[in-house]
Structures are given as C-alpha cells and as structure tokens.
Image (cartoon, helix red, strand yellow):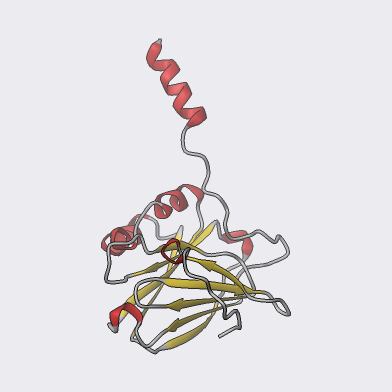
Length: 175
C-alpha cells in the first residue's frame, strides 16, 4: 500500500511539462529566419558545430532540454534513430567569421520546443531555448553565444546566456 501512495505521489508531482519558451506571442507562427553569426574569435578561433533542433513532442522536449551540448553531440545519432518523427536536426559547421541565414519551414502547430546546441571548446552546458520571433540571430563568441530576436518593425530583444549575465550588452542593433 505504501508503494502505491509513492507511485501516486510521483505521478502527480513528477516532472512537469517543459516550459514553452517559444510562443510567448500567440500571433507569431514561428521563426521566419534564423541567422547564425560567427565572430572572428568564436570558439577560441576554431571551427565548431551549431545545431538548431526542433522538437515536436513534449516528452522528447523534456529529454532534449536536459542535455548539455556535449551530451547532445555524443547522442545525436541515437536521438535520430529513436525519434525520427519527433526531432528535426539542422546542423551547421561554422568557421570563425562565417555567417549563415536560414529560412525556416516549421509551423507553430508542429513545434513544441526549439534549442540551439553549440559545440564550444569548454565544459559549459551550451544549450539554449529559442524564443519565437520573425527573426532570430545567434551570435557566437569566444566561449558563449547571444540570441537576439525581433519581429518586423520592433526593437531586437536580447536573451543572454547564463555565462553572459554579468556582461552589459549595449549594442542592440540587428546584425
């Protein structure tokens, strides 16, 4: 009987759903354009992989949202095998100073969460949730990144990484 109460307690108080970081504004369909900008000293002046991951199932989103970039990069092939319908991988290898602009093809109805995993040469988590906006820019620095988002006709919003919380960012112009 005691085990039954423990099971009931776990079921009702266990992990809640992943907070939906994407759709704060219900009028936004999804991200129209994703720009990834590598600064000249990004990743200590070394090439790196950056993945934009779209998750279409809430349980899978919880699992992905717990991974560091290092864990994610090691388990990427297995995730592709285990969840071919629930995860869409967009992988890019960038060299310092390189930038790419990507139109996206996902609708609001099919996306539960979206993440950026950056394979920086450090031991940080290097995983960020992505907010919905018409335009999202990911700027890669020496050992972290900055995400800026804005809608047509609005001032860009900056979502700094935890590593950058103590840095004051003055320049808010779109890249």
